Structure formats: C-alpha cells, structure tokens
Image (cartoon, rainbow, N blue to C red; front, side, top):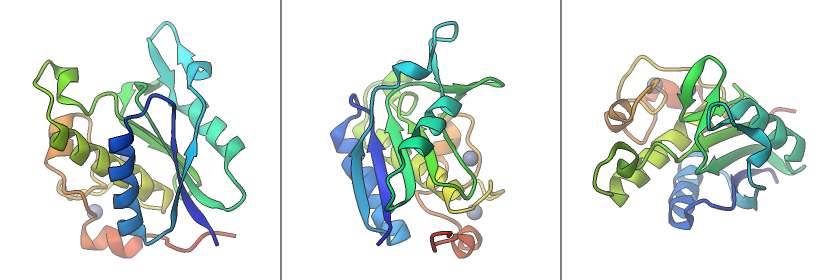
Amino acid sequence: MKYFYLGATPEVDREALTAIGERVAMEFGAPVREIELPDLDFAYHAGRGQYASIAVLEMLVAMCPGDAFKLLAVTERDLSIPVLTFVFGHAQLGGRAGVVSLARLRQEFYGLEPDTQVFLERAQKEVLHEAGHLFGLVHCHDGGCAMSLATGVRQIDSKRAEFCARCAARIERKPRG
Ligand SMILES: [Zn+2]
Ligand SMILES: [Zn+2]
C-alpha cells in the first residue's frame, strides 16, 4: 500500500489541514496519512524574510517515507524561489515532493477582515494545484481549472476547487516504480 502523505510544519492551522486532507483523499482516491514536519528555519533567507522552497523540497525528498508515493507539505511560512517575489507553492512535476504555503491565502494578509471559508477554499485549491503537479499535470489555460497558474489570490478565487475534464483525465494515478 502506498500512501499520499500530507505533512505539516508545527505552526500549521489544524482545521485547515483536516480540510485539505479530506479534499486530497476525495480527489485522488488515495489513503492519506499525516506526518509531522520540522520547522523550516533551515530554509530561511534573512535578506528576503522568506523561506526557500527549493531547500524545502530537498528536505522533503530526503525524509519521504518508504510507503509514500507523494509527500505534500503544508506550511504557514512564506515561500519564494530566486526569480519570483513569492510562490503559493512548489512541487516536483511528476515527482514525490511538494509544498504549499498558507501565508498569503488569508484575507488578513491583504488587510481585510478574516474569512475562514475563503481561506479554506483557497487552501484546498492550492493543494489540488501542487498535488496536480505531483501527478504529472502542467499548467492549464482554463482559468477555472485548479491547474491554472495563479500569481495572486484573485486568480485563485476565480478557480474551482477541481480539475477541468482534460486535466482530470491526465492525472497519473498509479505510483511510478
Ligand atoms: Zn503550478
Ligand atoms: Zn485544466
């Protein structure tokens, strides 16, 4: 049996993690296991005040359990890669390791009133998006599809928390190797 591992760094909101786990299990029909992850201090970039997602992916590959066919991490830390000011998430295409940041998904981040439902919907969409990359999906031109590229929360809000028919048909559900 191979499991879809959902990892959480210590500060992650448990309500969000539960909602994410349920969505992943429903979408991919995979048994989900949760795993505790260490704090991401090792990936902190003081000059940017952010965390390097590439270093996080390397850590995830190194600690991926033997019975995991995917390991998707969730963190509250704000992630970035060298060429972008931030990323909502980062995943290996068709690989095992991915990470999603919840840091920019809350209304409070933009100076707005908190809205738990909006936050949880965004979290589910971004987790589906990064999981989709792990299952071999590339970006989709359908702006309503979870696999469309979002560079801001407005684009996330205009997506559905599901894949378009074309992307859904392309998901590589079987573990490789
Ligand atoms: Zn993407
Ligand atoms: Zn699509």
